Image 1: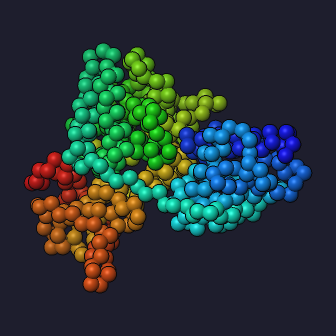
Image 2: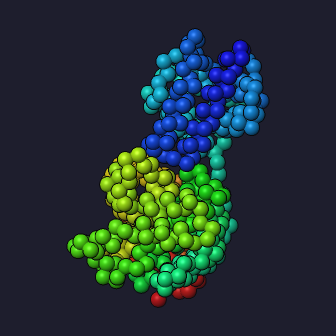
Image 3: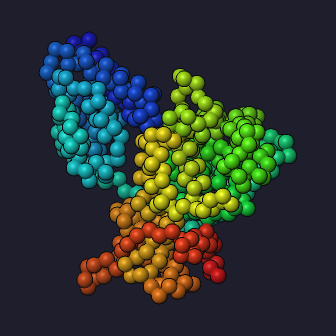
Length: 473
């Protein structure tokens, strides 16, 4: 290959890697992601200027073009080679006339986990179903292996300790702020470190605890719940380490600007006076001012504090400038904050059960929420999120404790009411994936999600019992 050709190939590889990294931070609909897509499209043009096709192959862990390994940064090449191989791709061929939309779809596929791609028939099948005709995919020497979900290594009691520590930290931060002091960042950092560690070790246990609601301590619970949900969503979107911590701190503190609100505003979200509405709309800015004075707070942490009410269509508050790009952290916290708010009973609203809340949020995709972020959130929660009450085909009522990563329709549940309508006082769990050995039929299946309030069930009470070992009374 000529030096110019080698440089063009290297530019293409770097552009693809940059785009894949960008998609780990930004949803595909974000303007920043669009710029990465443009760079890849621009890098492809010279490769197809004098040839009908360009083929990139993986051979023994190396990237190969026209039978020769690509020279350049080995770590960059190895990362892309491993990504392709793990998704069952032996070679990618781009045909002359390949469009920017087709390249974008390829990059989106390469950010999907290997298991979901395998279940869909592989990248080639996915692209073909999406009408992509100018990208050819050949299989590699090893098929993509499903990525198994990490086992839960904390029990619900240990997760409850993490949750309680975080709630105590939230209470202390708000109390310090009410007294006019700058809250200590040490308690916040420790609480968020515990939440990140808990999500990485036992995501489902902590997600279940976000359904424990308390009106008297709504602001504290809301801070912790949004923190846990945001960290879990961030992990599901590919964030790790320091980024999850920064996201968690921003989510945990996102409503600190409400600290000076009078009680009547909490109880009266509709029919606000002009002055009350001004106070409501000022809380993101007030939060940023207060948190900026705390030690050790990164700038990116302030983004969700400022942006969690801006809305995807930019019609929220504070109104963003024309060229302002809402950060992915802001989009994540907005989704999680709304979900926690509408699944919580307040003086002015009844709580939505999780499945209904998700259905309502889907109606707001493209206006309030970024569709790609909301899709990832729903994917993370599963069909029946932790805390959902379901009617089983046995006539029993059950509370979903943890989804089944292999079959989202068959979660682990706790039976809370028998077929005759009697409350079950003893702890009785059921794995809905369990089959009768004699008939090979499932012992129990979900018929429908139900509104717990309509059945006189207090989800918080049952989850509280699960996480403390106390009997519900």
